Length: 349
Image (cartoon, helix red, strand yellow):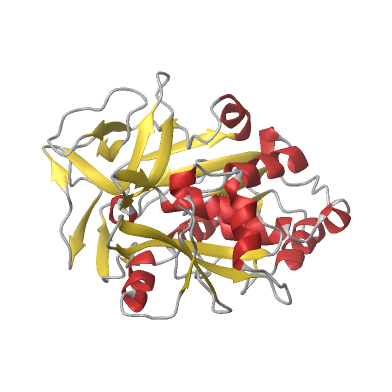
């Protein structure tokens, strides 16, 4: 697969997997003969893989072509879909259809709704669990490079709220400091994986190099594990905002903003600030026709975030902030605004 990751720098990931598949082995809870809905773009690794592994076990694929929230529910009911994978952006748009629409859809055929590719706000995950039941909601965290992955059911998530699960069989996981020392439980560090056949056994790059410490390879993400080995994501290391000496993770701020009923999605970046070193800047895409102001949004998130994490500037846009795979390129958004003037500044200190 080709990948730009979160950096936007193109590279090719050459998979070392042999070109064969056991037709009785379902991938990520797929079962032979499942009806599988694909709402995602096939240029993205997850939909591409999930479609073909479904075909490999005799599944039927319902291909949407382009995601639409209401049509997704209609297709699941019409074709009696058993398995679907989504990204949180899709989950958010479906949830925004509102209780009057969602109450018409119980989706009895759906056994697995698996989400991945981007952090999911806890409030959104909980809303889906309340709607469909914890036994049908799953989350997967991993890399195209197949160096390691985790998975968690909705039931386990309720006991470990915010986690993306424990490392899957065939891999090891470690949270390491910059010097390579392991972080204690609960302490944020960089997430590293090691496949059972050793470093470099699952892929190699064309056009890039991996970050490794010994036989451990970095995902580029920050996170922590609890005493039971459940992983909690913080954010990508390159996106971390250090403001006044405090670490601020954009995904946490975005989750608070996206909970506002008038917000379609948001992206949070750090911009230079003489006093703080960096300030939290929120770029917000409202839903169509919504009227939303700086102070209303700030008041909304004040009860959801610590004071030092509040946006110090807010920008509204009608441009799409995330691609069809739910990805946001914060580095590109940051670069485009480094020289911008006239942004709305808030006295949120």
